[in-house]
Image (cartoon, rainbow, N blue to C red; front, top):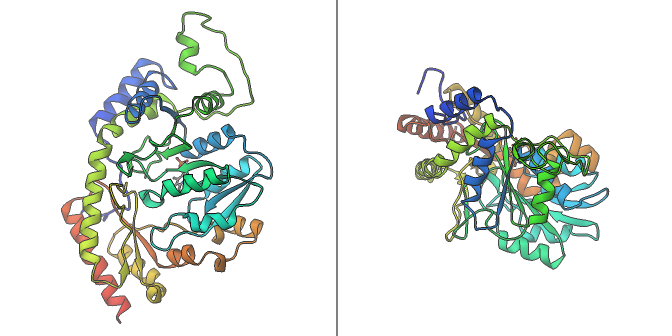
Length: 389
Ligand SMILES: *Cc1c(COP(=O)(O)O)cnc(C)c1O
C-alpha cells in the first residue's frame, strides 16, 4: 500500500495497451477504424456464431440505441430497478418514454419477476434488468415473463462482463439486447466506451446505422471500400455514438485479460467473505449453479439494525486511507426522479435498506495481498469498534 492509501479502483493498464495506443497515434487514423473492427471481432468470437458486437462511445449510448432499435416511443413504459445508476433511467426519457421503477430482491439486489409482474400495464413495452455488481439476474425467468406479455428485454450489463449465466457467457441467449460498459472503473475499460451484443440482424443493422449519424455504412467501410468509395446515404437522424480507435486500443488488450482479472476479483471476494463471515453483516449474494459473478462490485451490508453506523464505518475506513463507494443512492432518492414520478422510499423497502446499509469495498486485480489483508483487518476493526461500542 502506498502512503496515498488504497484507492477504490485502479484500472489494470500495461505496456500492451500503451503500445497499441502509440501505434494508432502513429498510424494517422484515430477514430473508428481497424482497431474498433478488431475489438468487435474479438468480442464476437466469445459468442455463438451469428452474434453481433457493436462498439459504442459508452454504455449509455448503447442503451439509448437499443431502445431506439426496439421503437420505444412517447408514453411507452419501461420497467427498471430503482437500485441502479441514473443512466439506466435517463435513456428512457431520451425516447420520450416513461421509466417505471421497481424494487429489487433483498438478497441479490437484482430485479425479479415477482417484483416486475405487478408493474406491467398495457403501456409496458420493455424490461431493463441490471446485473447488479456483476451478479447475473435470473434471466430465464425474466425472458419467460417478457415473452408472456410480449415485452422486449434490454439487459443493462454495465457491471457484468465477463459473468456467466448457466455456464454461458452473459449475453449468449438469442433474445434481447445486452449492453456492457467499459467506463474507467468497470471490469474492463476503454476509458469511455461500451459494447452492444445482439443476435437479431435487423436490430444490429439499425443500431449500427444509428450510432453514426444514421449513415448506412460505417466510417471505415465508407473510406476503404473500392466500389462507390465515397457514396453514402443518411437514412435517419442518427446519433454520434461510435467508439474511436484510441479507445478500442485499450479494449483489445483488456479483453485478453478479462477472465484473469475476473478470477483475481473472485479470489478477493472469497477472502473478504472468509474474513467478514463472523461480523454482523450481509455478504454479497453468490452466483449459483454454473453461473459466475463478474465481481465488478463487492457490496458489504451492515445488518439492518446497525445501518445507522454505516457512515461512521465509512469514515473510519476513509481515515485508514481505504477508498470506498456507495452503490447506489437509488433513483427514488434523487431529486429529479423522485419529484417527477412522485417516488417514495416506502415503495422500495429492499433498495432503500440496501442503500442505507451498504459499503462498496475495493475489488480490482491491482490490489496486493497486503492491500487485501489491510482492508480485511480495518473493516473488522471498524465494525467491532463502532457497532459494539
Ligand atoms: C456505468 C453504468 C452505466 C453507464 O455506463 P457508461 O459506459 O458510463 O455510459 C449504465 N448502467 C449502469 C448500471 C452502470 O453502472
